[in-house]
Image (cartoon, rainbow, N blue to C red; front, side, top):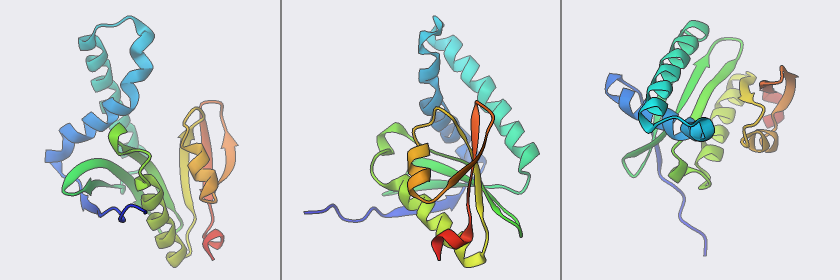
Length: 163
C-alpha cells in the first residue's frame, strides 16, 4: 500500500521567516564544522556569519529572486529561492530540514519548477556543491553538468528535456 501524496504548500517568505531560514541553513551545514573543535556557541556564531554572507551574495547576484517557504501540514520544512527572467529560471537555492528529506518533497518541488520552465520554454540553471548528494537527483531529473570549478558544478536543464 502506497502512502498518500504529500500536501505540499508554498507561500512567499517574509521577514518573520528569517529565524526559520537560518534554522534550515544551520541544519544543512553545521555538521560540516563538527570536526573543527569549536564550541556550540562558536559554531552557531560562525553559521550566523555564513548565513548573512550567503544572503548578501544571493541578493547581489540574484536581486529579483523570490524565496518561497515550503510547508507540509502547515509546518515549514524548507524553502526554494528562485529567480525567473525572460531568458531562464535560476534555482538559486533549495533546502529542506533533515526530517523532511527522503520523502519525495525535493523531487516534487523540482518537478513543479521544471514543468513551469517547460511551459515558458525556458532552461533551468543552478550551481551545486560538488560534494552535494543531490547531484544524483538533478541527473535523474534531466540536468546536464556543464561546468565544474572544483567546488561547484553548474547544471542546466533545457525546456526541450520536458517535451
